[in-house]
Amino acid sequence: MISPHVRRQRLASELIKLREEHGYSTQRLAMKVGIPRQRISQLQNGHLSPDLDDIIRILDVFNVGERRWEQIMAIARDAQGRGWWEKYREEMGPRQALIADLEAGARSIVEYQMTLLPGLLQTPAFTEVRARADRGAYPEHFDPSRALEARAMRQRVLERAGGPTYEVIIDELAVRRHAAPPEVVRAQLDHLVELGRHRKKITIRILPLSSSVPGHVVPRSSFFTYRYPDPGDPIVVAVDTLLADDVLTDPAMVSPYIDLFKRIQQAALSPTDSLNFLADVAEELPRYPGSHR
Image (cartoon, rainbow, N blue to C red; front, side):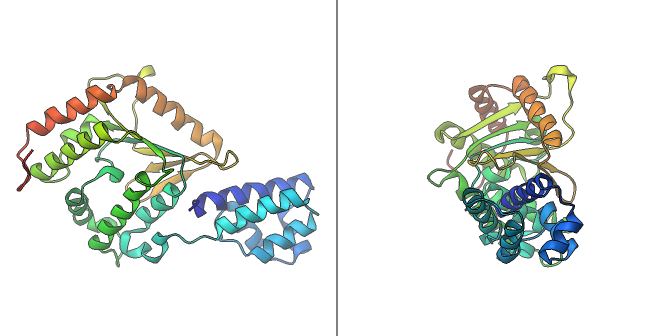
């Protein structure tokens, strides 16, 4: 499934481009098509799941050629999609639902994780601790059990045929400052080492506290970058904040994060050294009950 959120953003850019090519204001287009101006604005902001009849009427106004008509209609149909996460949005948490949407159909995902071990690679035990620890940050109908199921569903994106490549750089702070009981953290670190050594499409690296990022840049938050197979779709950056993720698609706002990730890559340990580092830290912690490693 292609991310409906991303396709809404792509549809928005296509509609704005069409309108500007023909010299129409939003108000003029709304009057010509017979659609409320607010709805046109919502479509252009990517905030609305499109009505295909509305899109057809807009394309008819501009007398769009067959090839472009088919392309825009295909984008609009994708933008109408409802992924599995929509049914459980409140129970799993709107924040996780949005990230699941962005992950859908991605060609590559890169992540800098400053304070927590990465969600796509978390063990169920670690996820459960975090879901219950952060309960106050979620809406009234949030269900930790449902959040745990949703996390497992999201992790399948890395297992499916044709799934994305995934690279995560974890700040040493996230490894050293335990976000779960020590035995749960140890099992989690063992899991990361196992994935890093045996899953070819997963790259795990560590940014040591002692490393200086080129330019003496100091990352201020965790962030994720998503790229998609269609070159016309935007590169998306999601920036981690306290209660939500800011989703950026404007190239002028996305570009600094792409540059920042490249700088962090230069300062990070190699994949091999990173896995050895994680294994050494795990050895310092008590084993999870029942573990034989």
